Image (tube, rainbow, N blue to C red; front, top):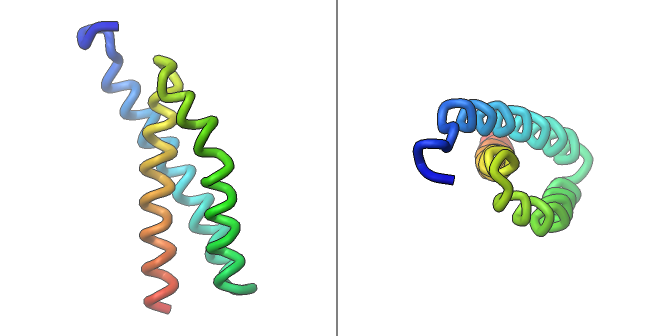
Length: 90
C-alpha cells in the first residue's frame, strides 16, 4: 500500500471509536474492582493486557486491523491514566 491509498480519515475515526470504547470499559471495570481491592484491579489489568498483547501485536500488520490496534493501545493508555487519577484523587 502506498500513502495515497491509506484511508487516514476513516482509519483514525475507527481508532478513536475503539479507543473510547476500550477506555470506558477498562475504567468502569477497574473502578468496580478497586472497590473490592486495589490489587485485584491492578492484577486483572496486567493479566488481561499481557494476555491480549501478542494477538493484538500481530493484528497491526493487517491493513484494516491496524486501526483497531492503534485505538486499543490509546484506549488502554488513557484508561490507565484515568484510573490512576481516580485512585489517587479519591
